[in-house]
Length: 304
Image (cartoon, rainbow, N blue to C red; front, side, top):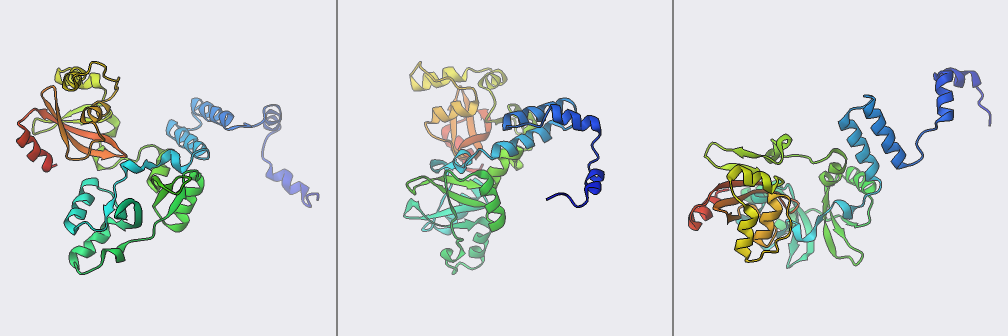
């Protein structure tokens, strides 16, 4: 059907003849890779900024990602036990600093609801309340769920957390709206990440201890404290075949033999490494001080 107002369509097309000729000779991108290259070219020409390009690329990559790509794996999930006493629940909420928690009964696989951290305050005011009454329904999504669709569902349902299940219906992990948004805008920092622009550095504190980012290179830490941490771990393990680690977080996790948790510590090369903050199973910040007796170190760790 022809346009009943051809003159109007002609007026609405404000492109010059030269622009239309260029578009005819050089059509727009036909693939994601070509579009990425176009964005890089736009940045080079100062049409868009570097941060805008990164975000736009994140939006494009989101279309090819699934919940399984961005989830926190099941072994790293912070869960609450419905049978735990209120004090234990409060300690876990304070330790992890999350706002929402999957709650299980009996077995970690048996997730019966999601608890908002703020709802625990109701129990403090009215201990006679039943914790089960405060639980919110669990939202389950398959590992293959596209992040585009998941973000849309989060917005429509006003939900911020979902449990990811594998093809057999078993819990594979959990994913939050923050995990999805971070694929677009990058790491969303919290109060522990105020120095994010200086990641990979060592900061001196007023109490003569140091705050060290978990992604700091081992070489940087060795230089700052005049030690050889890899040699210390080899001596501790009695094994010369130490895997290659790039960051202090990876080396300490290996030395501990498990994913570190807030409040834990280890002594290496006459230095105590206290775990200050973790996220998604990785140590974000350590507090480092000269080695002190084990009982003193335990008291310090308990106060973190």
